[in-house]
Every structure is written in C-alpha cells, then in structure tokens.
Image: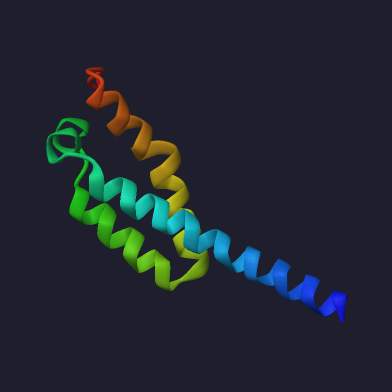
Length: 86
C-alpha cells in the first residue's frame, strides 16, 4: 500500500517539474518590460508563444523553458540593470 502511494507521489512530482519550469518561464517573460526586450534584441511575443507551445509538448517545453531561463532571462536582467549587450 505504501509503495503504491510512494510511486504515485514520485510520478506526480516528476510530471510537475516541466509544468513548474514552464510556468516560471512564462510568468517571468510576461513580467519583463517591453523596453528590456527591445534593448536585448529579443521579441517577447516569440518567446511567449514558444513557451506556450512548449507547454503542450513535454520535451520541447523543457528545452524552451530551459533556454529562456538560462540564456534569455539573464540577458534581460542585465539590460534592466543597465548593462547593454554588445
């Protein structure tokens, strides 16, 4: 009985990780100001659409959210603090 519950809990947690990463990436992308996107040379609409599409496909969602959170998000944060790219 406990083993079934433990297996179910592990499966739910593993399935929730891509959803949580996607939600984090989507909310972060949506809250960044448009001027930061423009100065970073990125397009918010494209990233929001890619993240939303990725939410429907597990592996694609992990990759898109991972790329956004590890590459694009730091660029946007740097622009917001005054460090321009280039």
